[in-house]
Length: 135
Image (cartoon, rainbow, N blue to C red; front, side, top):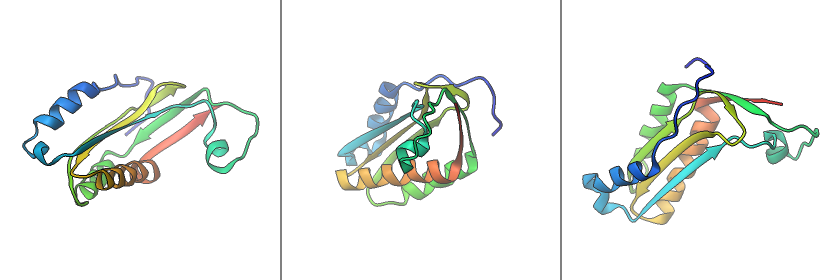
């Protein structure tokens, strides 16, 4: 996907939850988790590696590879007890405070849902997206 200056409108999490609960397999769900990634002003290097150059993030260029994201979703559905997944990724130039992504995962028990959410967010962040911080 190419970068652009038009960010997307964030999805309705209420609508996503209603959709998940209306799914025929919803009767198997014991937990639904939602992840909301947001552009922060603290640089990734400071948060992840403790490297503080005194700068702050003013925005981010964000893009993703849709085929890789779809593959990551498929892999997550193969995990034990996972019945419902929704992923929304923004794109283009994002300001501090803007939504980067929403991920919803529904499944049978807490450990399975937490593991699946951690797996999918990690897979997307590490293999499917390009984030270029602007300072």
